[in-house]
Every structure is written in C-alpha cells, then in structure tokens.
Image (cartoon, rainbow, N blue to C red):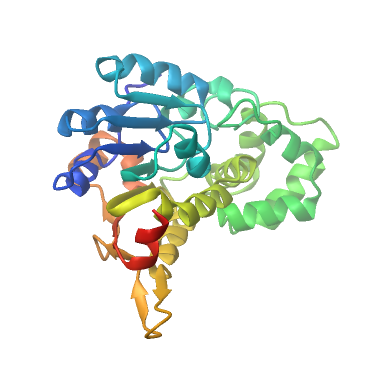
Length: 310
C-alpha cells in the first residue's frame, strides 16, 4: 500500500484557521491524515468524531491518532447518519465538519477490495464490507438496459451502450470474477476518452458509485448538515468528480430560507470561495490523486430559524 497523502491539506486547514473548534465531525476519517493535521492545528478541540464505513481504515486511524485518543470518538457508520451519530454521542451541534468524498487511496491500493482495474482482485467495490451488494453481482445479473443506465449516469461514459452490450454478451460465455476480467474486456473493445484515462476508468467509477450509493449518501448528508452545524459553524466537502461537485454546488445555491414575516429570501450559508478550491501544481505532481479534487467550504449563517432548531 502506498503512503497516505491527504489531499488539499493546506487548503482544508486554511478553511478552519480562524475558527475556534470545540467539536468537530470528520465524516470520512480514512487513515486519519486530515484529522491529525486538524488536531495539531486546533488544540482547543475537545471532541473529534471520526466516522468511516471502512472498518480497516478505522483500525489504522486509531493507531495514527493515538496521541489524541482522549478526544477521539471512532464511529463505524456512513457519514449520512450524522444526525444519529451526534445524538448517540450527546452532541447538539458541531463547530465544523469535513467530508472527503469518494474512494480512498488505501481502498484502491488493495487489490482484494476490487476498486482498481490496475490491480487484479475480486469484483467487489464495497466501501463498507458489511454491505451485501457487490460489483460482481451488478455486472453478472443486471439487464443490459440497467447496466447501460448505470454506466451512462454515474460514469458519464460515451460508450455506455457498447460496454453494456459487451458485458452481457461476455457473461453468457463465462461470468465476470475479477477486476481484470472486466478491465480487459473494455480495454480491448473501447478506446480511451482521454490520454491519461484508462478506457475502463469511467465504467469502474460508475459501478463503484452505484454499489456504494455515493450520490444518494451525499445528498442525504447535505440535507442534514446545516442542522448539525452550530451557528457560524464551518462545513467543508472535498469531491473528486463533476457529479459530486454539482450536488454540493446546487446545495449551496439553494440553501435559502423565506422569512415568514417579510417574505424575503435569506441565505442559510455564506460560501467561503465562489469557485471550488483546487490543488496547486506542486501537490498534483506529488500526489496525482489531487488532480481532480475540489474543495467547497461554507459558513452557516446564524439566522433565527436555524438558531432555534440548534
């Protein structure tokens, strides 16, 4: 497994540098890279809730963050369950949160997790290994129409029809067992969309998003996030492809409340950067994964309705 490098680390720290953090929610703790830096930068943190649906990642993070074990609360859940997580830990609201969306470098690097077309392993792709649905079940049992829809909507793959047809034709001869089986079929029959992208990249992305319901989970989390934040609390989300970033952008755009007395539309959030924050050239050279990362951060405005609900 390659060394863990948290993406946009300087930029994340900058988002919170002027904010006093008492309680922090890390929705995608991963191996603990962002958490370690935030805990160092904010010694005032009393409770750091580290949430991840990957049990292996949580085990590693516990070792990484042992110096702050008295402040840490480790939670094996999906970050979309933030309301339940806070309630279970008797926390009314958080001063800040971070969600680094998508597959982690550890998951990609471990061939047995089945996320990567460059490392042979079972067609799995589950972030939470307690979940039942795998990529293997999807490619071997779903109809051509449904496969095509998944590849088109979640992968934005131009050759979605051809790939769906090839999968259905191939599985009648022998079922797909490994990542190599699927990657080889696509690479032999479909050209690259871009020079730096393998021809199977978008199909693998689509299957991963579908298996883990990533877009639905993100929407569910965002709907709850404003009520989880304390007034003037800061939220931050790192996304890695246009589908995710579009959801975050639309959420921020539509975060308004109508004043029942005046009828005026009041903003619920102050967006801290008009455009998404992206990695500097130095970081993308050192960590190619950062190339597609986009950070959006916002501050919750303390207007009356949300203040009362907190």
